[in-house]
Length: 209
Image (cartoon, rainbow, N blue to C red; front, side):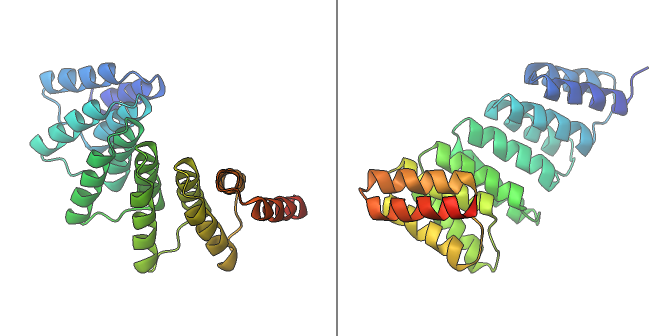
């Protein structure tokens, strides 16, 4: 008969197929079979919710984890954050990070990337900058990807001066901007009428290509 491993494998299949209702149905079947789901099972369910961009499904899974006293790990939290962020529920994503910190889980670069993506989708570019500043004040060194998200968020919200400041900060810290960062800062310069800066950045791109 099926065991927890079997159900976890089936949940992983639902994740790959972006079929989160099927994943939640598996949880009901597992409990009906009087089997105790573990953090791997729940992690697969949350990954399915993230891929399907279902914030409500992710919250249901987290509630089940709490009721069954299964402690979430940071990977599970990252999936839940991703689901909320992709659904433009950045407020829930911020709340989940706060809960994770209270539970003494250590956020990773993936955690902050997921949260920043959620804030960006919600047009919360100032909160993106706040989060980036917090990381730096805590002595962290945000990755090129995280910087690029912040620059892109500023550009999309016509904050060209902030985008340029972040881009210059990357160069000062000897961080190599990626294509996303270059394209975002060029878009910001265009919006702000900063044609001289645009030409300078284009020349820099040509030099590095």
